[in-house]
Amino acid sequence: MRCLVLVTKEGGATSGRAWSYLLLYNTMFIVPLVLVFVLTFLGMGTQTLLEWSKRNIVVSKVLLGLFFLAMDEKVLNRQPGFPRLLPVPLGW
Image (cartoon, rainbow, N blue to C red):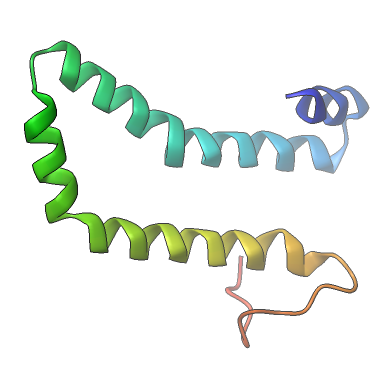
């Protein structure tokens, strides 16, 4: 959070980029946590959540891996000295 505060105080083009990364992070990680909390609060049991997790483990791991590859392409490959993991840019 300190990094976000520092970047937004400086302003410029990096401020918008920092906010977009924060929005992407919240969409990918915080929203599912809140969803699980709400479902549990409304009465969905632990056993039901575990069964759903077991049924969808492969899909969720593949999607998470693709997300991290895309983030690598977006963030790290813009820095000099980092090797490219993907042979072709994603075109963002």
